[in-house]
Length: 268
Ligand code: PGA
Image (tube, rainbow, N blue to C red; front, side, top):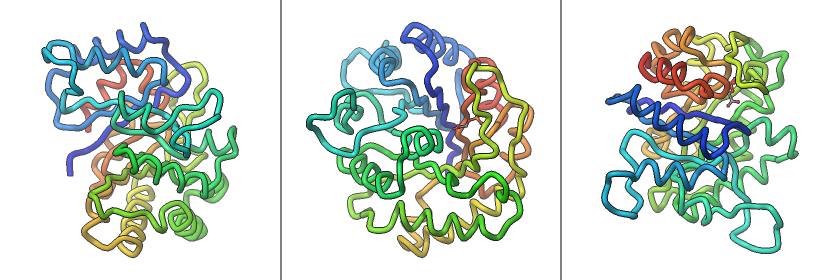
């Protein structure tokens, strides 16, 4: 499986800033062996998509193979009187992926496992690929060693994923993000913080994959990349990318600096 690197820009970047990031990134990364997803604010998706298509000679969705777009959230309903919300179909016109259940949304917007489940199904219904963040239940104190981590994750996986259908080759990406490792960067400064232990993360990714096999069978589970997110930088990426159970990375703070993000991509 090709490694997947997802940038989560959170509430950063105006349209102009987002487009200039993308232009610079393409200059810095002529060819890469990894797949990249830029999870941008809704407002920037249209311009980013246009920028990615430039030169393709058509207005059809032709995003270059190694850089795709993602949103950071969707509403669980298809349409209706939900002022200020964005439906899955609206995102699908502009992007291929969507982050679902990020711990910041669970904390600030009180998203539950039930809602996460509904949003994954809603994304699948329009052909979006959900990137589902896991670990919000793990709790900051115990994440590195406690056996409760596995128990918590097992429950979270069941609550979020049970009942999903993969009958039409639906795609799914999971990202393990222990809350104590997320840099919670508000300013765009690159964290040097609390990244989890790579060996422990590899063990957890292995555990998640076994759970997926139980839920969906081996052939579906094998297609689901399990990423790690939390204070990933160019300084620590190598120690994670050596671990074969980790299929890629969800990068927050360090994805706001294009040169740093390019260094991360090149080091994977
Ligand atoms: P971080 O954020 O890389 O800044 O820790 C990761 C995330 O919140 O997805």
